[in-house]
Each structure stands twice: as structure tokens, then as C-alpha cells.
Length: 71
Image 1 (tube, rainbow, N blue to C red):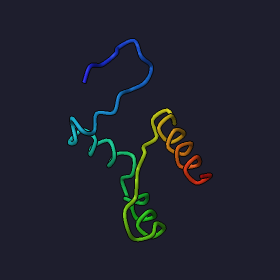
Image 2 (image 1 turned 180 degrees about the vertical axis):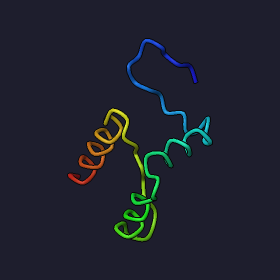
Image 3 (image 1 turned 90 degrees about the vertical axis):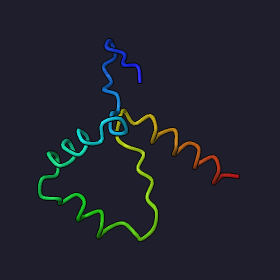
């Protein structure tokens, strides 16, 4: 992964450094409240996490799904 140091967007590093990503996740949800809520709220089955980032991925995914539903 080539890092563009002039970009204001922090690249996702979780796939390359899962140990650092785990530290970050645990710091943001020390008591595990988010995970407990998601476990109780989400239905059983697969969940697609498109991440937060700058919203581009989620927006693009929603456009694709919306266009498929209109067919």
C-alpha cells in the first residue's frame, strides 16, 4: 500500500496491521457497549460493514443497490 502523505484522508490499515486496528477498536469501545448493542440489534446472518471513512463507499454502495432495486 502506497501512502499519499499529502492526502487529508487517513488510509485504512486494518488489513495490514490488525494488531494496531484491534488497539484502536478497543480504545473507542472500552466497555464493549457498541459490540453488545450490535449483537442484540442486528439480525442473525451475514453483515456487510462498509466502514466509515469519508462516506464514499457507503454512498456508492447505496446507489448501486438503489439502481438494482428499481429494475
